Figure 1 (tube, rainbow, N blue to C red):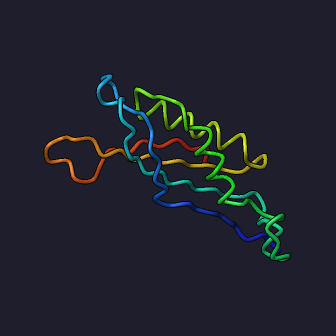
Figure 2 (tube, rainbow, N blue to C red):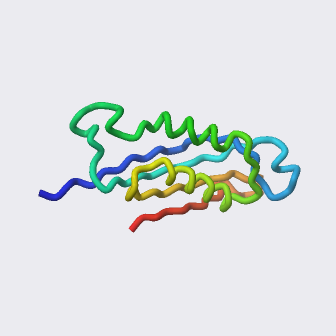
Figure 3 (cartoon, one colour):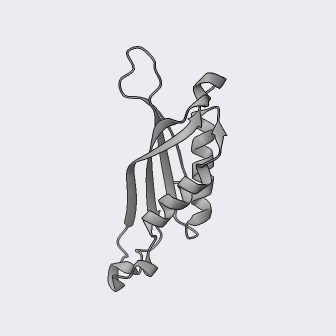
Amino acid sequence: MTQPKSSLSILGLELYVHLGWPDQERKEKQLVKLDIHLTFVNPPKACQSDLLTDTICYAGLIDQLHDYLANKTFHLIEHLTNEIYQFLKSCLPAGTMLRVILTKHPAITGLTGGICFSLANEK
């Protein structure tokens, strides 16, 4: 029997970061939103055990990410996305596929949906 595919998504995580090309824009933290999509090689054992220790604790992962970003400054959304991607990759079990999508809402006239940049190691 084939293992079912399993995934976990964290959607709309609000992060406040020092981000922007001009110094003035980076002065105050600004809101960005992060979507994280994990696809597992095998379903987590927690599907059967119902134990937190048998899966990824998303609250703990989010706390670690907040701590990691707390005192960092970024010029570009691409660099921030890569930093988040690399950090999360280091926290995940080997073989886990990861996609991160970061959305920024710059003050550009007529722009209502924001700017997104993503990185993934999906197949």
